[in-house]
Image (cartoon, rainbow, N blue to C red; front, side, top):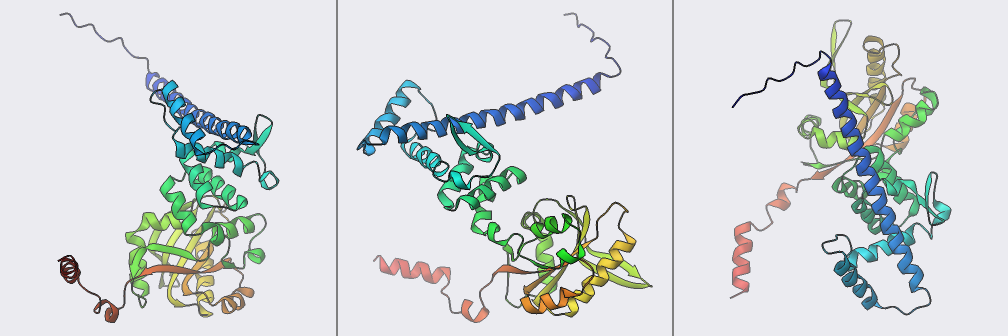
Length: 357
């Protein structure tokens, strides 16, 4: 069999191929987003129709069951039209029509009714989580917007809700209003949290800073998730030299949106006023030695087991560099004396066997 020779390729063929691949991928993403938006609109419409038909009628659970059976008979293999999901569609419609006064812009419109555009941009599973786990409309929309911004999976969304990210974000003690210009100060404030939740670590109550530092490095991905979007890891125990003396930054980051270096100092105990002076020194050195002219002033985060609120506020009051103080929370291990009193697996199994005899 004669093998046909391939035509010679033009010099810019690879560039052409990459451009087409880029456009195809972009179109696939847009098609996926559009398909999701249409699905959300469909579920919204189903919820609306059922609720409007139920007004003034004493429809029981059996009507929904009949609807499910008839729809599945008409559209064999169709997904998403279980009895449970249809009830979720009703709840979805109700949630964003009874709370119109709370809806921020931008909004989408469907059949003369409005609902937040954000909810049409996240998958149905995410919307179900928001409806079932959050009752406050402003919180629900805040988490929806964060999901779009950060690309959270469902499991991460659940984790952020359960760790009360809404209540923690922007709560750190800072001096940003005096040391950073607006709107950089507002953006920096909302970037930080209090407390930080390190529930991926299991350390004893008396864990030292070295153990905390090592644990965060070993779980760097989880740590970065807790820090939030925009943090880029620069280094651990980052070396600085000032007048032939060596200094080491516990954790060193660059924040892409703030356009600033971020120094994190870990403290296993409660906050002490001298911590602010040490951080002020670190930030001054980083600004002088590492910052590019286009960078904003570096920011310091002092993470303590107990932030000592009033003490921290006094310590930061007249400090000239942007510093924040936050607490961290861990999953602690059981004390040795308590752990020794707990039954072993073998003892539990023996007790269970005895109980069933």
